[in-house]
Image 1 (cartoon, helix red, strand yellow):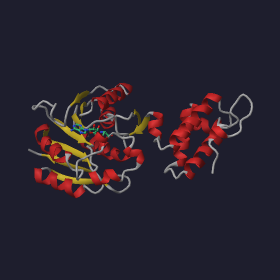
Image 2: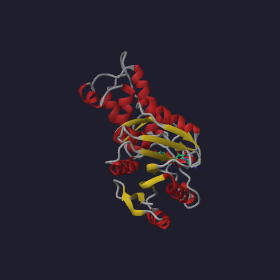
Image 3: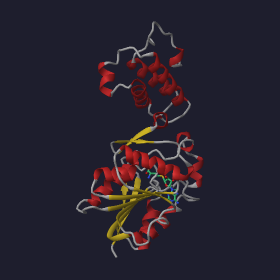
Image 4: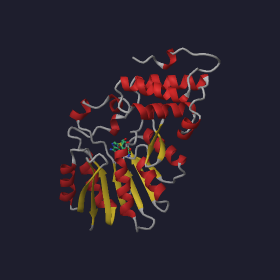
Length: 297
Ligand SMILES: C[S@@+](CC[C@H](N)C(=O)[O-])C[C@H]1O[C@@H](n2cnc3c(N)ncnc32)[C@H](O)[C@@H]1O
C-alpha cells in the first residue's frame, strides 16, 4: 500500500518531494485504488497544483514543490481517492481542443460527443453564415465549439436548467463567443417562424434500469436532468425529431447523440418522420453514437 503523500517524511523549508516524483507517487496510489486512468489523472493534478506545463514537468520536474503546491497536490490526491472526477477537482474539461468550465450543474462534456461537432461542421461546409440550434446545451461545449470553428455562424443554445445556462454563458465569454442562450424545454422557447441549417442535440438518454448501474463518478457528479431519458431512455427523441420538421430549413440537418444501444430505435424514428439520408455514426470506440437525417421539404 502506498503511503498518502501528506504522510510522507519531509525535510527543510520545502516539501522534500519534486513534481516528477509526486506524479509517480499519485499514479501508483491511483493504480492501487483501481482508478481507470492513473497516469493521466496524476499528470493533470500535478500540473494544475504546480502550475507547470507538460514540458516544464520534464525540464523542471526535479525542483522541490513549494509547501503550497505540496498542500494542493495532497488535497487533489485525497479528493481523487474519494471518487471525485479530475474535471470536477479542476473545474475544467477539454472538449474539441477548448477548455470548458464544468460545475455540478452541467454534464462534463465527453470525448464521444466530439463526433456530433465534427459531423455538423462537415455538413455546414459551403453554407455561408449558417444558423445553428443546440437543444440541451448544458456547458455550451457543443455550440461553442461549432461557433469557434465557424465564426460566421449564428447560434442558439436552449436548456431547461438556468444554472446550466449560466455555465454556458461563462464558457461563451471565456472563448469570446456570441450566442443566444435561452431557458425552456426543447423548442418551446423558440419562435415558431425560426429556421436553422443544423439542429444538434445531446439529450439525456439513460434509461431507468441503466441509471442503477452508473459509475459513481457519473451518478454522483453529473446532474440527473442531464442523464435521465425516461423509462427506456428514449423520451426526448420523438419531441426533438417532431419539432425539427418545423425548425429546419429545406435541406437542413438534425443530428442527435444516442446511447450505444439506441441506434436502431432512433433511426426508425427519423425514417418514420420522413427524414432522408438517415445514418448512424460511430464514436472513436466503435459504438453507435450519433443519428442524423436531412429534412428535404
Ligand atoms: C446529456 S446533457 C448534454 C449537455 C451538452 N450539450 C453536452 O453535450 O455536453 C443534456 C442536457 O439537456 C438538458 N435538458 C434536459 N431536459 C431538457 C428539456 N426538456 N429541454 C431542454 N434541455 C433539457 C439538461 O439540463 C442537460 O444540460
